Image (tube, rainbow, N blue to C red; front, side):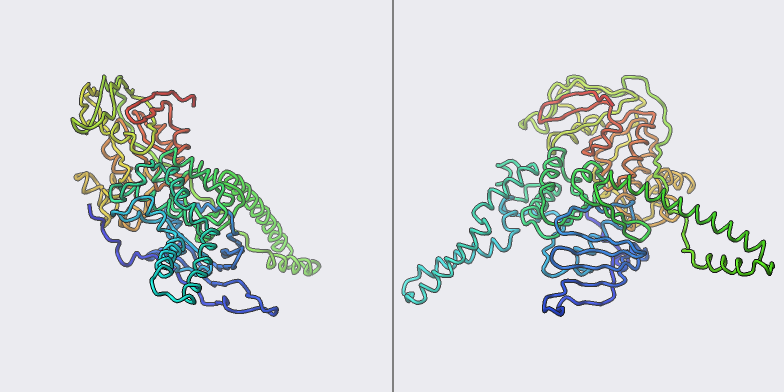
Length: 571
């Protein structure tokens, strides 16, 4: 399926007032080591995501963002930042502004953003990673060139000494850069991300887009830039690879900015959280749990201060109104009027509304709802078995999570459960009134980007009223103008909500979901867990999200290459 191009008027843009000082020196002759970018605006189409932020970038050990209204956001070298905010707030767009250099980053800082998979060609996976280090590649090329020159017949002694000296210097630089250890380091990173030694020697063209995204991540980890930008890095990984990445990044020594919906991942990695909301940036020390606690305490304190000031204003105004024309108290009245004028204009606390998702009511089926009886499966007569003699079943109130490494057969098992694939031997038995609602991992590819959510539902479910389409979208938080915006203008998480609404309009009594948390924000993952628990039918999900599994899962199906293990969760 060809991806539709995004409309030109929806291109994300950033602007800033010019006030550059990167080449100036201070009184002692040293570089001032800073850049000031005044009044930064970030927008996508007509929607403004960041308004009037003053961004101060400091060379060397510190560079940062100073947000409007006194919010001081500084990126300190060597710290790991989680960039969080609601779907549609502009997190991914803001990262792209940095990676595309629409916001100026000091030129002495190396920067990488993992956004696209590597090209599929004849290059071996491990070689694709090694080639990402251009300095190493240049040194090896120069070494080969110098060897050819030194061994060239007829070279004068003076020239031979010159090139031999350069070669000696180059060897010292290569030793300092640990060029000889690079292949082992690249192999170690790839193995951590799920590539076997044999797969590392295969050409990249033999791998899917998701696996080539892993190669792109491996390249960034191998190069280790001064600033690493990661947008939902766990979306492409299974749980084993996520645990490895957590451990690897905990030892990271340069700066990272991560956008992620995975609460557990943010807790394991982040030393700081940057909250993007209400067109401003706020910074909190600690991981995501620390941020949640600190934000609650901050909002509570702000609300107390606002209410106390409102009481003071009311009491003072009552005094002024009562004695305004009392000559004996004229000086006191004037004093209180001036006091009111000097009071800062506190505003009510801005509290983001709770995210609420609702799947519709459905009939409760009699058990068993769905069973596999001695089911085995392989794709061709000569291919190996993926499953053998499976005897599993689910009920009307099942809450099942399927986990396993990528390629182990999780999605294949889902397709067998749905009836899209027929067991090679054995049987699939389903309740005659079973209606499965399926959420695909790559649901965005199945959405028409050129129409609004309401129009998309109308095309899929004709004959219903506008109110029904809007109500379906509203159950998943897409009300008002969001329901009328073209799908292309929505964030990744909002596109997922359109897919949820489309699924719900099928009126299913059984849900099967493949990685439903991809692209959702943390709050929406929590809301999804509550919605799945409230659903009256059965639920089967494939997920790598620890929090969703913790909230929803009552039964765990562990898939490991032709083996299957069933476990029950204590809660």
